[in-house]
Length: 101
View 1 (tube, one colour):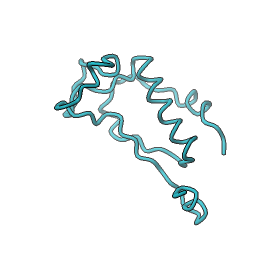
View 2 (cartoon, one colour):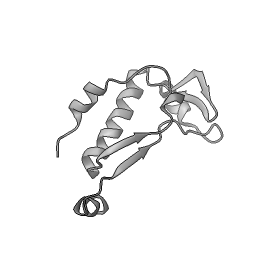
View 3 (cartoon, helix red, strand yellow):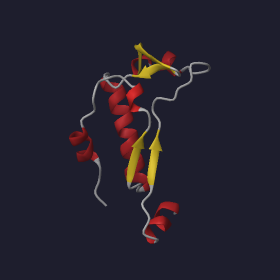
View 4 (cartoon, one colour):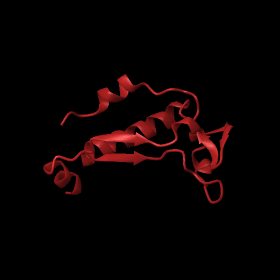
């Protein structure tokens, strides 16, 4: 309802996605999904998110698309992408997965 109400008032709503803020203390995700992290690239919060790995890339793209489609956000702000691996995501491919309004 919040997004719908914002749209009714002529406002856009952006979602701030943070896929790289995993803290090294208490972060056990790497034990269950090691391919999601790149030990070769460290950040101040632990190993970088590994967008070079197809499974990780697919998970995060599907997650972003979910927020856009399910809640009708108008756009995304991807926080600190410079701290991720250097592999690039295909914006053209990603946009094709997003359902139009």
